[in-house]
Length: 331
Image 1 (cartoon, helix red, strand yellow):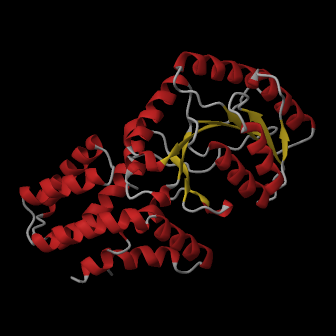
Image 2 (cartoon, rainbow, N blue to C red):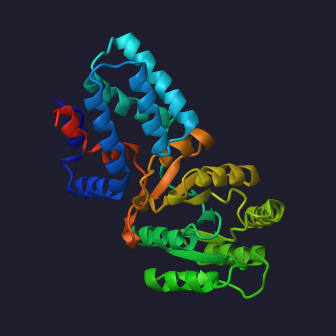
Image 3 (cartoon, rainbow, N blue to C red):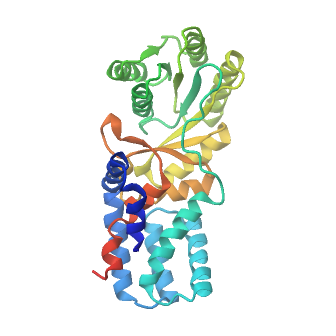
């Protein structure tokens, strides 16, 4: 059984899984066109595995924005397996490359890609991220997903600084039929307090909180998030249950810098990568996980509100390497 026959056999028995596979394949098309075509050229250039092959493979992986440190570790792991398993043909190395990508992401840990649901009362999810990454849109799309699953969802306009932020969240509230809590005053903690009280009293399942994204002044942002977290903790001692960092995948390595900065400021439990379909550097998924050791929980694979999906590492790898069937067949 070939490498991708194995992938297909995992998902092909379920129509919804097949649809999901297609979404990943389409969403990663730009990355795959660059990545797989270069890999194909490399494998036609070299039929035997050697140091020059590894040098050029390293460059291809770095260009896919997988990250220098991740790539160096990855290449070392490949070399170890090549020596141990006595691999000589570059075509035989393809399956090892895919296998090691999965291993390097999982990193001997249990990957939880779903929202950590509260057992008692509403689940509070705080969204952070710099301006322009699609934070408010992400909240709207996740609200739509949760609503479609039969949940009662409340949106809280905690970004009281950016012009138009409240209006944008209200527009999403109208689109997905979710109520929005907002205030004209500048204190976001006050809005958050009102929102969580309302959610508790009116038996909401989820509270999704927007926040300002002013990373330029980390001290102010840190103080603001600390204040919001304290207010949330007073109303619900075990909340927030998730703090999701939203990153625009098209920003590449700058997104990793944002992840490191926000990790210093507050407790990030998961990452949302928007616009993954809009970049040829989809390897950022692996780079972020390796750099900050925070799992990617959602990825944006299209413009529609249904195209923000719960992240699945196996489907991601399938989408990344889908065209490798031709390589295995020598085409």
